[in-house]
Amino acid sequence: MGKRLPNPRLAKLHRNYTIEEVANLFGIHKNTVGNWIKQGLSVCGRKRPFLILGRDLRVFLEAKKVKNKRPCKPDEIYCVRCRSPKKPDADLIEYRTITDTLGNLVALCPDCESIMNRRISLDKLKQIPAYSNIAQSLAEIHITPCINPSVNSDFSKGKKHYAQTSS
Ligand SMILES: [Zn+2]
Image 1: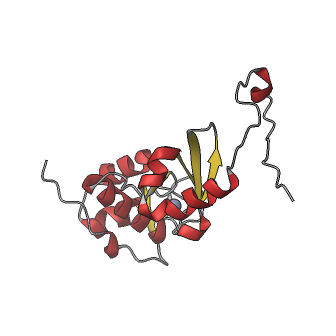
Image 2: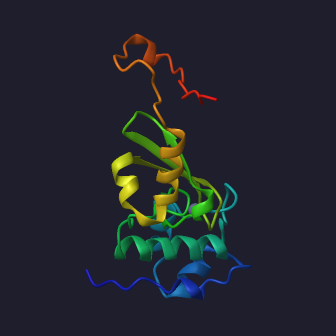
């Protein structure tokens, strides 16, 4: 309750910090820094003194702040590495079909460039304005995906049936 989070901007991007230095910087206990590391704050090296990159520290604290504030917005995808929801570049999002109604949004995190995944139904995808382009281009590809409507075992083999263009 009511615990103020340290200001991420106090961490200088191009500096390394020891745990003690981080504690001093934010006026907190060393154990709190230890907890952050357990929560996913990256440290360099396997032996003491551990060094924490200012950049990692800032990203971690900012993610913490965001996480406290709000969940993923409809047009955001959660970045596991940044531990926060990110809004990917609309041009760099790919939708990978899982079933006729369900798929995976795959995108690059704008901050750390790791791959983010979000499972989403096609219906929902269409409802999100930021993704309408994807849904639309999908609709263009997806003309009569299967010739035989009474699909059976053939479907599970992962064969793709493309509509033939009549010339
Ligand atoms: Zn990220």
